[in-house]
Length: 310
Image 1 (cartoon, rainbow, N blue to C red):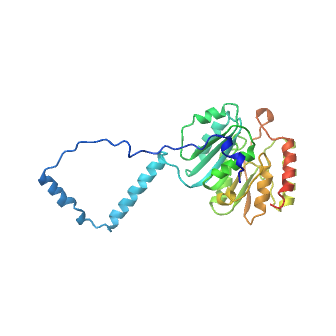
Image 2 (cartoon, rainbow, N blue to C red):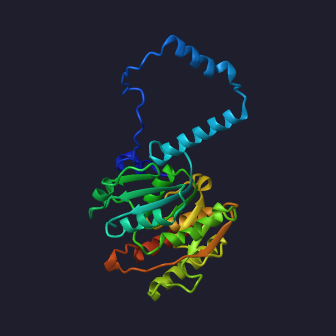
Image 3 (tube, rainbow, N blue to C red):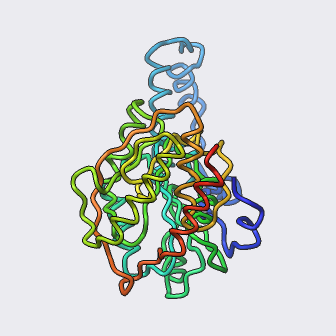
């Protein structure tokens, strides 16, 4: 679970607030015509409540339909947020101004309507924070801004705490992973066929042109499998999805990329169904903003040993 350092002290603003309609404070008086005594009597005879059977099935169905339409209208106008979503997508962000708008547009384009998006701006300094501040409020989108950078793992932990989805999935903001292929990762859980799904970059042969990255991922995944008993092909993948209730019940500690071996070890220690599916990957270089390095690989090895028993 998130530590105290993840919470209020780091936040410049908390999730988007949603305006609620004020029906009581803006009443206006209207002058209505006073019906004649004979007209009022005719109306009473025509619409007397005594003539209406409150148990009539048509009336009950009509009232239910009107209630449903009212609730749907409120939700559509973003007047109030839902208290549950089918899916929460967590988007950790650090200096991704050039790619984040495209990622969010793609999520809107391909994801189910009952999807919550939580964006954690982890101390960006490239204008990402200002761009996010200018987004129109939406009931299904939360934006959390932090003053300082604490790392991807810390951002994900913070977002998990605020998530409401039955399924929680992770999507990077750098366009290495297409949100459309995240659907492959999410659906087995929505369909009840898995509790945890990893989107592997290597099940279909792999698309990473760097042999060094491929070797590093292979080595870390093999070592992780030896310690956890899983048979993964890509432990370090970004595209991961979890049963929301299960994930919110796991205590997580790692702040940077150690999140990957930590969460893998802790789900392996539970009696859950873990599945791997192919996902597409479009690698970028360090000159394009890639942040993971050899020090993170060393840290991942230490995390594997630390959390080998879950």
